[in-house]
Length: 255
Image (cartoon, rainbow, N blue to C red; front, side, top):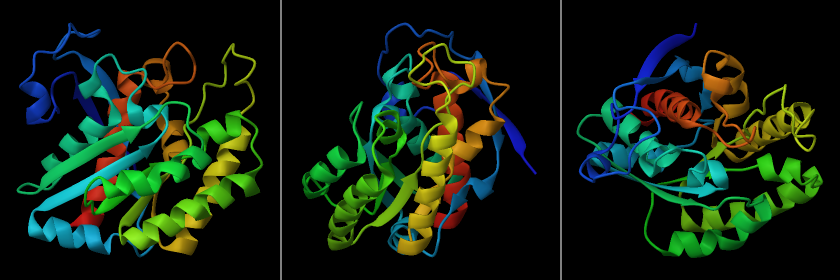
């Protein structure tokens, strides 16, 4: 059964973000931005996350988040209302006493190929316990052949295995059915097929998977279904719900 949680601007920001003086927000502080249906079942650990659980027991978890625009936070009205800082805060609130750091290395527009190309460099920047890899949306929108996408994924997989890190895969977002953008119209079936393929790869490789595409089917009560006016990038409500769904499913599998 789905539970629901109301999120407000400024309610779940990390201390480092609250300590700054941000630009004027698009939504007044304290105003509700999302009522999120939460379900821990959107995350499957597939027998992974062992290194991350050890890090949590030691009281310090470092996460590297890679992928495209939704990792970068494009569409959020403020940097601290993007996925990475909200996930950091959401995990810390569910795991008291654990210092969580989410390092945002998202680059808008990337495909799986471009992320795989830079994975080794990103991992060399510092030791992390868990890599979140969001993939698939841009590959579908660019009509890439699935076998090519997953050939790139397997190149990245080799880098991740050599680095001895846990992995959480995040599948594509869902696009509005009523989009006026002809490039996006009718894309959800292909995005859903990509999500299924990513779930299969997670089971095969023993990687955790967040089923974002499925989770977004329950976001009808959010402003524009959690997607901004360009019918592609998430809005503040969408980022808030995505971060909460991820933290809700991930935290119990890390404890």
